[in-house]
Amino acid sequence: MKKLIIANLKMNTTPSEFKNYAMTIATKAKGSKNSIIVCPPYTHLGVAQEFLSSSKVAYGAQNMSAEESGSFTGEVSAKMVKDLGAEYVIVGHSDVRNKFKETDKTINKKIKTALANGLKVILCVGESLQTRESKQTQNFIRKQIDDDLKGIYENELESVIIAYEPVWAISTNKSSANKGITNKDISKMVEVIRKEIEIQFSTKASKKITVVYGGSVGLNNYKKILSNESIDGVLIGATSLDVDAFSVIARENY
Ligand code: PEP
Image (cartoon, rainbow, N blue to C red; front, side):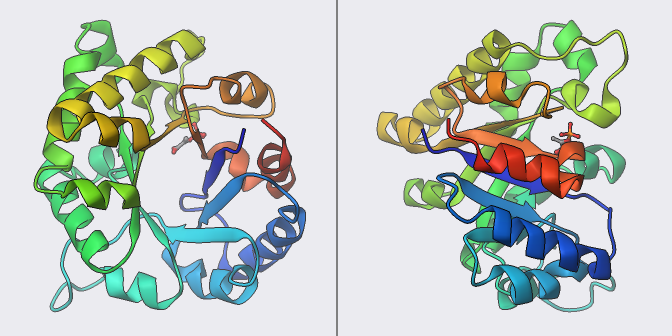
């Protein structure tokens, strides 16, 4: 089964270091049945354009401004990202939601701006450990989906991937007491996400929407996680920094 394998390099590597990364993944991805997307920092998108555009690896930005253009010093617009050949943009990553206090209202605006500029969106949703422990996960995720996708047309969902990334399961947030997520947990939440899409849009949309899982996917567990038929793929942070490890996951037949 063909899966979607996404790398989020976060704020790691320099553009010069990324050149080697891009050349390696472009070569190793040849012949892979999966769809592969690499999301490096903004400063690397020109390198991605040079080394990935004629490969089977697509690329995207890790964030963007909700605004089209203007007096927003330090911000990067959807048009700029698109002009460098990026096909995707990650919106609503928990790093941005939590460390930079990004709201669902801003995320909703970013999604609309991204879609209006021809970018496909990788929308991250996910609950904190506190929300999980207070048994509010399902309501929390439903609300994130409702707020983030408010006013989006059903046909635009073809350009939206939902990444279910429980904040507590992401490698940098994991405590040693946390044994990680089970396939049963993942399947349950994918069902909740699809059900909410059905309520807000239609049964057809709920069946068609692409849903991936993210949170501590690595060489030790990728086979198990990707054998879960309820998910269309994975979003990988820490392990994607090692291009050889990421390539192993990207090349596997599922
Ligand atoms: C992420 O932060 O998007 C992520 C999935 O990270 P990791 O794979 O390191 O848990």
